[in-house]
Image (cartoon, rainbow over all chains, first blue to last red; front, side):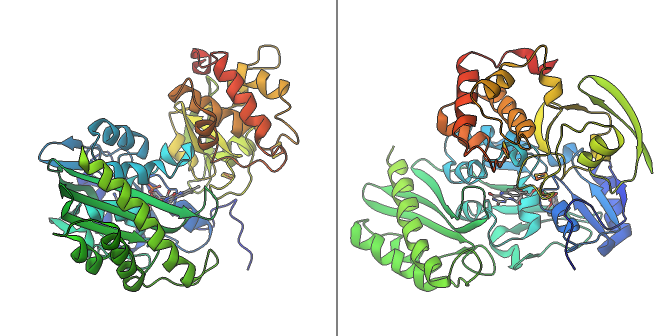
Length: 293
Length: 161
Ligand SMILES: Cc1cc2nc3c(=O)[nH]c(=O)nc-3n(C[C@H](O)[C@H](O)[C@H](O)COP(=O)(O)OP(=O)(O)OC[C@H]3O[C@@H](n4cnc5c(N)ncnc54)[C@H](O)[C@@H]3O)c2cc1C
Ligand code: FES
Ligand code: FES
């Protein structure tokens, strides 16, 4: 069957609750039949393509409870905040370059104006751009249902391509991470086929340095496995070590071995492995330089 | 079916829509606002771009019910043939319009960009229109036009009209 993306083929009931409690009530009632609608830049396309056909749409764009932006001991980003609000917030804080670069890389005004971090996480794509930098921040996802609130470490959030730990009655409220100590910095690099395509490979790095010694290291990659993932052996190889060209090379080699990319229409597995090493070197160099000042 | 009211270029318009109708379809088919184009239907081409409460969105990914009570600006709302917006003038003067299918969305993205950044570099212009595809011009003339409109200080409050 050819797909006509000009029309939505499934019938649904549309709810636009004004409080989180009301939204959670709908999800509790409808279970698997409901879908949360934020900016719609993933969900509406999936519905047009016939990949999802929810009977109820719960629009969360009016929920103030999802719109917090807080910068204290923890940095908290409301799941319902649009990228166009989150980006200047991060740029104003000046320290969280990796996440800011990931959001900035989305580029298109029509996406930045409506799409949200909650949707980027909720979609569960291994190629999504915000999870790798957030993973390098040891971020957690704050999740609510009508019955409880739980905080899930982001590293446990994705369970497979398009699969996440969220139950059908849960809403992502926010993503949060500890404010950086002095001397920590981050960076993000991404490779796409053309500027506006889905990422082929992404790499995020967060480091802390004492002189030439790396005292803290987080490396995460996207689109190189079934979920966004941390390169733990590479992190371990750098942490506590004096950083020189050979240390970075060894680290890049470990990453190339540790990831599990696939062949697809965008590029081959082999290409993705090579590219991951290149992106890592760039991202690391940028974060390392930033950590100096 | 649900009754909605959308202010299109300042004019309140009422209509009854099904919840599964997208904004682009309601604008074109129910309200006769045909300067908004329906291209890919999936967020790739930007032909369906409108300003929703002043911000560029893809109307093919927006449900009409989501626009209830809000303001939609199309390229006709920016300026008319008699009184064109500086971006529209620059597009004509630079030959940035060929078949014209992308032009409405392109001009609205440019207007949105100039609202956020009155003096963009050429790279920033390219990034600002990265959500809009043009199959005719090769973009150079479009970037030239936006560059000139920006330099002429066209980001004044006209788009708020
Ligand atoms: C043209 C275009 C370009 C794009 N470019 C990029 C890119 O460069 N990088 C990138 O990473 N992505 C990109 N995307 C994908 C998409 O824009 C992002 O994933 C975006 O963050 C999705 O957010 P949204 O608010 O639109 O989500 P929606 O489409 O509304 O929702 C996505 C999914 O998350 C769920 N969801 C949303 N909010 C919540 C919540 N609070 N709690 C629980 N579940 C929730 C929904 O039910 C749905 O399953 C692009 C999309 C388009 C159309
Ligand atoms: S028709 Fe909406 S982006 Fe192509
Ligand atoms: S002028 Fe024809 S698509 Fe741009």
